[in-house]
Length: 116
Length: 346
View (cartoon, one colour):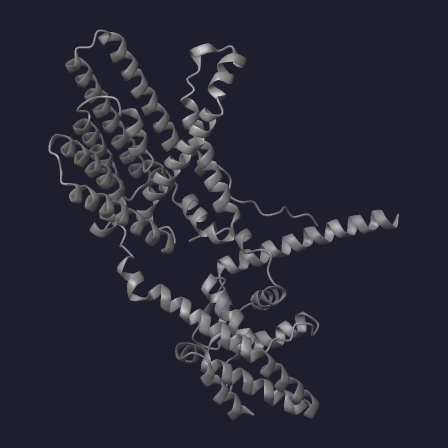
């Protein structure tokens, strides 16, 4: 069912970074965890269990899907399952991107007015 | 540490462990390996991070499992009616069938004095069934079969709203201030109230996150809202009759026509066919009501026969047109643009 992405907004910071991490393509759990840490400049440091709580919720909401192979990064010791954005997940991420851009633009304008 | 983590994983529910346990362990092992390679401080930091995150995750997983079990439980699945199935049809048409039964029971009770215990038992059975199905439908996330029940609720709310306006003597105020005299039928406020309530329902389901999936269903399948509104009609028919002796058989027949419209609605796939089923059911019902009233007036041999007959038929036609228009509102709702995303600004 095609839900409106706007219903899912605003995203929490960790959800935003998890979805953003999956934007270029599928990843397994550990790659997501490292990517989220890098993307957030170490501000969002997810534990394994917190990551999978979020992953479970995103799966339930249909924003990501689970693939039963590790993708290109599969190898010994790596999880055998990977995750990928669904079409809805991508649209939600784009919607959040636009929302954040709008906020930044407004903030920039107001701060400029205040500084003038 | 890895073994301790494997033990701690047993604190998660079994189904969750089966689904994510292997991944949790693999990701934890990789985190620990990476951290250990960077030194003792980093390993300690990762251990603390992992232990800190566990209690919330375990609690959340248990709550999630409980929620899932509740939804998939025996009680719930018994009432997950397959669309188009006999059970769904019966549940959806119950408000109509019960209205019909009530009318006929009232008629029979008048001619054949029913024992008091039978009347009490019937009333208790009626309200228990309606209330039970109402609560069940609410708990099941407002499935399709439940929508006519919401329609009944909407009709009751609309009547209360209408009575509120009448009690405020707005009709007197209207006639005095507008200068329109009797050109404007104050009864039209009943319909305006109903339309306002439909918009209120949409606004609430659109803005309350819990009800958004319901709003989305109404947007994706617009005749659902028509079916909801169809549930208001038995009560409106009751207002339409309510004057004549021996009107009950015609009243019951009108509701039977509505039931047939509902039955076809539940069996059609295409939205337009479903919508037309409801409009045809309404049309047949109103024609039956008009014919019934005409027959009753002619049999009564009233002194003002022509006047009453014309007045009643015009009133029935007016009711029909209003209801047909209200049932068509969802079609316009379908034409509204979908929730727009903020425009690209940078």
